[in-house]
Amino acid sequence: MKKNLKNILLDFKNSKIELDDVLNFIKEQEKIVEIEFATLDANRERRTAIPEIIFCENKSTQKIIEIIQKLYAENQLVIGTRCSEEKLKLIKKKYPKGKYSFEGKAFYIGKPSKKISGKVALITAGTTDVPVLEEASIVLEALGIDHEKFYDIGVAGIHRLFSKYEKINSCDVLIVAAGMEGALPSVIGGMFSQPIIAIPVSVGYGTALSGFTALFAMLTSCSPGITVVNINNGVGAASSAVKILRLIENKVGKD
Image (cartoon, helix red, strand yellow):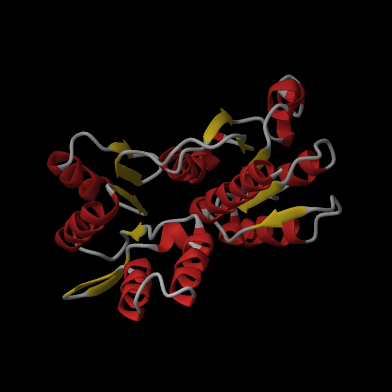
């Protein structure tokens, strides 16, 4: 967007286009879609690398489908998260060609974004952490990011992680999800040099405190350089990975 806007302004400065052309261009960049109950930011991906993602929790299926229709008409790609099984079934019936994860409670409809270089590792400590990274997987796939899954390799059986070392080390960004005491990101942080994005998961007995114990453990990790997102926030982790890889690709493209 910045480059295009610069060219537009230079053309205006050199009297090649009129002021109305500049204003029309800026309005097109905003691309706000108004519906009765929402104001959709249809051009968010162009600005931020991450499109507006439908948070389906507490929205009726009818409203979700109306948002899908509007966003798809603009971008030919729609992502939704925190979508119950009942809602997913109804949406899938209307849009059977979409990609749906009932475990991750997420979906995307339309053509994924153009592939970019780089690969993300999705790592869970246990199988109960998997739904969070299945949500992340939908977002990554929709936005054109290759990724590989390494599930159930937590510290209770640390040899499982060691057996995956080479494959994990071949990835460019590591997303690590853990509940209970949230120890796995610290172990990963002490073994790998890649950017690490940790997700605390709301899994565990009483003093796990619905993910807060894992959150505190990750925030106070003695392994430096770990980025921590909110509890169960697969979308946030995936979005951070997308921005990292797009930045690398853009820098490489300029060299």
